[in-house]
Image 1: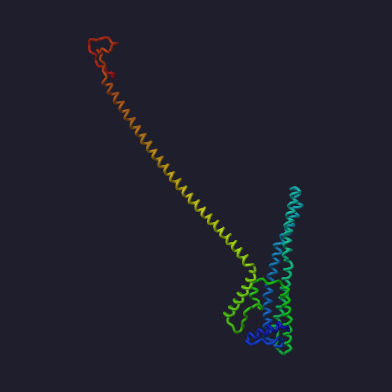
Image 2 (image 1 turned 180 degrees about the horizontal axis):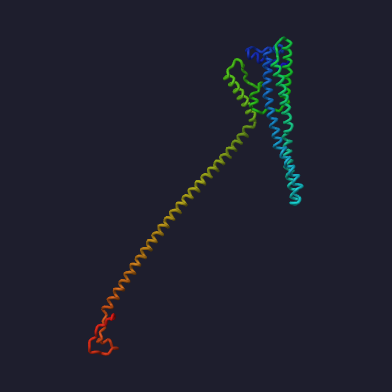
Length: 343
């Protein structure tokens, strides 16, 4: 057994027994510690196998739906346009269409090659198969192992050494794990380890939360390697842009409010003018009616006066025949009789 496995097993035993670490020796590793190590490897193999299987399916979907299928459709359309549009359009337009479609296909294939999705997909599939195989072998050994004698223990140590090296080789050749959940659940990356037999559920949950918080804090610190002055400048620029956006939004709101106010004022003025015009029209109509009535009354009065004057004049007019003014008539001895026009 290698020194790294022995140190790991001795460290777990000393943590549980609260004793000092003994020198590195394979004979000091007990069957219980070997089973604990194998159980951790089995759990990690199951989680990593599921993770890499999901990544394989993800890469396969991306490769098919985003790159392979569009390139196939565009190449088929390009061939159809190159042959079927000759009788309907000119050759220049057909050439331009074919060039554009070929350019798009070239961009899609170049992006696929730069992302290297095919090799990643194959690597994820191979890693998933290896982890699944290792999981089955570990589960078989843990289930069927019987502690009979020293020979069985030695075989268990050799098996543990072999599978531990195999686990390390698979992890080293596989793609890096980017899932925060997977990293926080890794059996060999736990900062605070507890004893599953002597701890309560609350202690176990607090320990898991502590491990997740510490690992996420480390990852956040690593992700913020950008210089602080650059971040401060970016933050200032972002704040300026945000403030400008806020100011522009406020100005738009103020302009809308002013427009609404002006429109309301205009409507009020128009309503007042309309009321004034209606009142003036009503006044003019009443005035015209009064004038018409007054004229009618005046006309009636004038007619009455004319009728009265005509009646009185016919009754009062008399002609004196003996009047000297009447030179056209011969003089008569007898007095002139009153002349009545009605006779």
